[in-house]
Structure formats: structure tokens, C-alpha cells
Image (cartoon, rainbow, N blue to C red; front, side, top):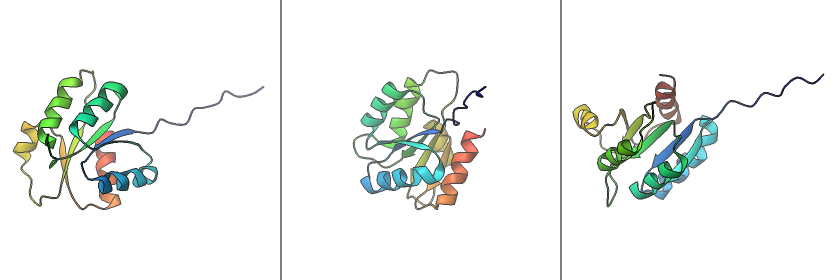
Length: 132
């Protein structure tokens, strides 16, 4: 008698929004080490399209400084699309050394990471928000 096969646990689905192709490529390369599936968007418009199609992201990493639509405005637009029962954490990512928590809260961002960051810092941030 065969035992039922178990499906492997679902990997977290992370949307990375960044206008820098090098940053997107880096995250794509790190995704396996982090045991996550990465969806890459180089603009707010691509991010919104990804959300409309995919809808089931567990976490979003949002570059703050982007042309056309900045990360704060993009976050507000994304929040208006996410009408689910569960909260999807959105983490601001920026090279600015200082960041105002009040601005973060006003933009409906959950947390902040400074660039550059280490793999361990990124892993810790992902774990923090996916385990809460």
C-alpha cells in the first residue's frame, strides 16, 4: 500500500518592485538561497499588473525612489487593490540613511530596509514579516 505523497511546502511569494535592473537581478539570484519565489517589477505599473494577475503575494519589497511613480504612491495604489482578509506586508527599501517612521506609516508601509543590506538582514526581515 502506497502512502499518500506530501506536497512540498509552498514557498513564500515575494514581489520585488525596483527600477534598477541590477537590484532586480540580485534578488532573483538570492531567491533560491532565501527559499522564496521572486516576482520582479521594474515600475509601479508592472507591480500593479503583477498584483492583478497573481494576487497571492506574501510580501512586497518596495523601492522608494523610482521615476514616474515613487514607492510611497505605489504602495498606496497597491493597498487599494488588496481587498483580502489578510494583510500583505510592504517593506520600503531605500539607500537613504535615515527614514522617518511617520512617513512610512502615512504611506501604509510596514517596515523599512536600508540599501545596501546583507543576505542575513534580508532573510531576517522576510522571516520577521512572514512569521507574524
